Length: 543
Image 1 (cartoon, one colour):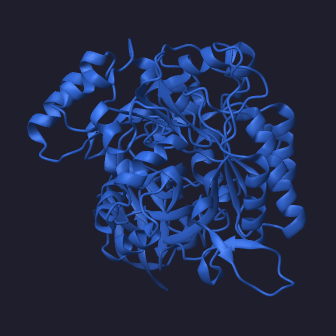
Image 2: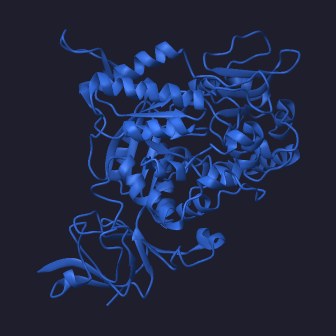
Image 3: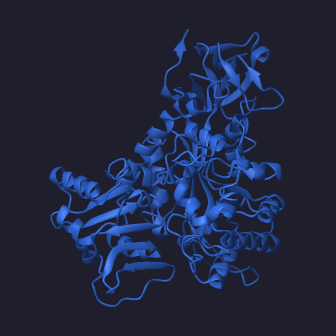
């Protein structure tokens, strides 16, 4: 028997309980065909020497935003800016070297800023050019005065859009802050992006993923809403694949408002979807349509997530849903009637209740979904909700890096009791639920080893413990970022472990995450990344 490749001299951590370790891996036609003695007498076209490195299943980021992330790699970076003057200084420097009309900035974290931004000061810093600052949360933006003028917001009276807020000072003058659906006002002017620009952004993001050991990613919202970049966005994914820009397997969620009414027989239920009835699961192991993405509420950072009780720092405010609940329910059930799996962004516990009710009703009316339905984020989740997720087969997709980046501010907003229930992990596994590792990149850093470390440590940026009972072991954290994410995305039978018949998606590490101090997990070097047995980052010696 002859196969494509054998990787020798490796410390293989398979993630498979039936066979947890090995030293050799055989690959043929993009899949694993054997381990160790199963390869005795087998010949390979290539023999690759791992030189004692550690092999794990490739990491799977179950919730990211690749186009947005790829764009941030070319935009003005405001990460780490802690004063308004630092923001203004960076804008001045950008204007001096960038000939484009609009100054677009990313990575801005208002929680870490000593003082707020002033729209007039932004105008001065930019020399009168329009400024659009995207907050790291993805749920707000700040505009300069000229930016507001360009998108049609003047100083006169104007109603807030449904599910959004135009920030105003005590005189009623817009401050430049746009929350939630108010960001659509910017996008109505500046979008859609050209397909070629979207493809290039995907290429930048995918190259970075490969360098970090990510072999699969799910993009949580394309083609519509304030998260999309073009109504034709999935075409850009197809074109990026054809151009060889996608180094990772990609699953893309279409947003709810990108779906349209579908005609059908009088006996058919009302359904919305893509024309021709295309739905979740279309595609292959390289590029696939995932669930429909639905925003039910806002963010913890902006205090807009829908809670059952008031925020600890802002009495009288318990957030809000993104739209009329009955209208949202009708649209979600119509998507389910069109055979779409459901991925519902729900951060506050009131939004989680709403989301679980929708998923439960959709499954009772229309049967099992073609892919697992999911709760995205889960900023506050009660024990009864965790039990209900397990019972319904709903995956929870939290982002542990939020704790390391924004935990102090989130704890201030939630108070001590709710912080214990924030972004749960261990309790999901104890309940027999489905837990997926993810980043929400670029909202937070997305290197998977740093996500593993955050799952294990659960410490805020100041080092304070954050819901310590929800900590995972290293092994549990690795599984969440591999097999757990594969299961949540509907691919648990084909990837996420290194076993015969599974896709040959492999990350090669310089050290075993189990053997290094916890604080060093995120710093382990990624030696190589293989997708379908092909090296997409780094090298393995051939002998």
